[in-house]
Image 1 (cartoon, rainbow, N blue to C red):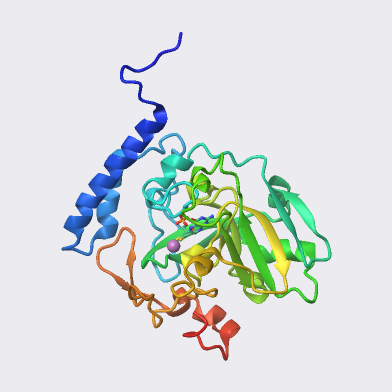
Image 2 (image 1 turned 60 degrees about the vertical axis):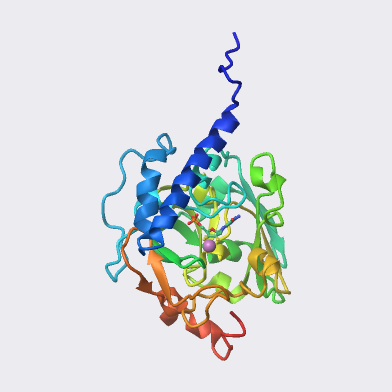
Amino acid sequence: MLIKNSDGIKSSDITDENLYWNRRNFLRAAALAATTTATGLLYRKLNTPAKQQATLTPTALPTGGYALPTGEAATAFDDITNYNNFYEFSTSKEGVASRAQNFVTRPWTVEVGGLVQNPKTFDLDDLLKLAPPEDRVYRFRCVEAWSMIIPWLGFPLKSLLDAVQPLGNAKFVAFNTLFDPYRMPNQRGDVLPWPYVEGLRLDEALHPLTILATGLYGKPLLPQNGAPLRLVVPWKYGFKSIKSIVKITLTDTQPKATWNYVAPDEYGFYSNVNPQVDHPRWSQATEQRIGEWGRRDTLMFNGYADQVASLYAGMDLKANF
Ligand SMILES: Nc1nc2c(c(=O)[nH]1)N[C@H]1C(S)=C(S)[C@@H](COP(=O)(O)O)O[C@H]1N2
Ligand SMILES: [Mo]
């Protein structure tokens, strides 16, 4: 027997309704927040009753051990997995987790080609055997001036690039997110040009801090964080960390990068975290660490200057932002 509810509401409408109420609460709170700087804590409180990740959230979370050598503790798992930018699913940071929860990430292949000796399409599970992921706790700084400390599981992008042997004329690495409007509903609209694409210079891609992440807090990535495979470049703004990657191409010219392409005055190709170069519409000097009161000073190269500043020796970082 087919059971219809009394007023003919489809489950998709109910989801939208939930999102509507979340957004309404959020807007109301945003009005309150205008008098405080506690945005991070506020959104967390508001999100509590609306959690829709019960079945995906690990039952026993690691309780400690994830911190930077500076003592900065990892951001809460619930915050990392419920405050997301992933426009393929939703433009609302609080809406991504529920919209993405049924995203299927197996089987998954990653096609690696372009200017390489050995082009190859990797099955993700085979790739993970070649390059076992390890814990990496990194600062993460979004261009929108919020930040988190994230305990990733990942492996160096270099391990993958070494396996395909870049040719001598390869200078850049281009990345593509999956394009599948059936599985990524916002790709049916044009909020961004699809697929989402990003790029790095080859030396940035080969840097030991640059990883392909497959998990966080010791668990496989949830869809909202870019499952099954996403880039993490900790000295660059978050939008360089392209999610759900299906294709990696070595090129001799600078690849297209989505945000740089849609708004080149606001988002550069390099997008290195730099407190001295403001976004045209807001300051980049400070940041809201999610889960904390007050604001922290933003650090040059997000605190990784000792490791990466030499990559940009002699470059004008105000022109090459
Ligand atoms: N494919 C894809 N990748 C993406 C995005 C996106 O919308 N689509 N958003 C970016 C932005 S702006 C940020 S801040 C980070 C957010 O990652 P998180 O949700 O794991 O914190 O993902 C980046 N990668
Ligand atoms: Mo971002």
